[in-house]
Image (cartoon, rainbow, N blue to C red):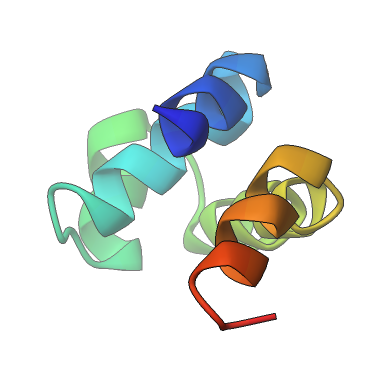
Length: 69
């Protein structure tokens, strides 16, 4: 539930590419086509979303508890 909560905090423009990539396993090219944006925009949004999530304390707690942090 913690990951879902962290995803829910993201603005839609960052949340949607993460879901498409990591839950639906779409390529950057497929996401760009589906969203009607450039592939470079998809890349930058994924990068930004991962950066925001990396700073989320609740996600860090999940990694620490799993021995990943």
